[in-house]
Length: 329
Image (cartoon, rainbow, N blue to C red; front, side):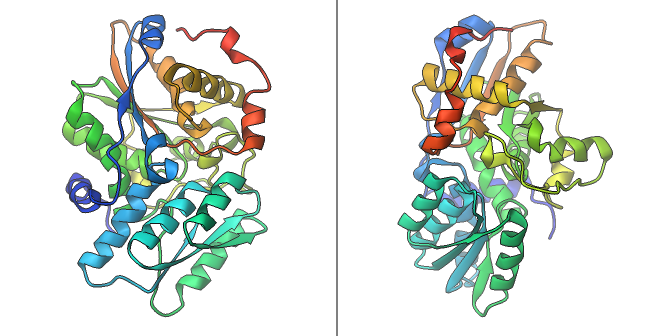
């Protein structure tokens, strides 16, 4: 498969428009005052299914329908948000869905996947889920919708940034989290075309820093086991063969520890009054690290990737009161 281009993002935007929500852009006057910069948030936590993942999954199915290749069944492997997205999108197109997930998948995300009508198969490990989905995809009239390593997935995810940059004044930076790299790759494609002066910056959990290690080594590094991080949406074992070449074009990349992930999850929930999940909030640590090196006021965009959190994860996030220590540079 060839790497996607901006034209693919543009086509995806038109293709998925009837099926998704154009999510709002929000900001916090208080946060902007504390930082001395303007931060805009694209609230994909308010997307249908509560995450940006619906964009890519919908784009794949709409693209298949355009070609007259819509299957009877789709399969997917996911730690949560992609599972919900495929389940929801499949229902919109009248297609059966079967999802393979590791047993430690978020309970909220697992329940939602079933609510949308998909069959959920729980596996011992993420690697087992990856292996089982490949076997299922070999069945007749079945298509595998991967979580990130597909041109139409990347193009679909890039539509969130496309929507935002069409509405905002010129940005100095665009920030997004990195799991497998689909969102961040799509963000890069949209930003380079619509706002070429802006830096594009990624962030991932330090406990699951396969992307950072890959970027440092120049080749894809695969983790041995799924990391136990608050940012479960970014707990992938490795980036993809399509996303990695795009990630190599990033301007900067940050690894975020668990304390700072919890810190920014609390603060963004408090300041924005939104149900922001840790994977989304993680990007704010990259924002403040990057802003701390700037010598003039900047305007930046942050893609809030989702807002699906189960009760156990929420308790871990709020076990310490980070709201006693306000943000600053």
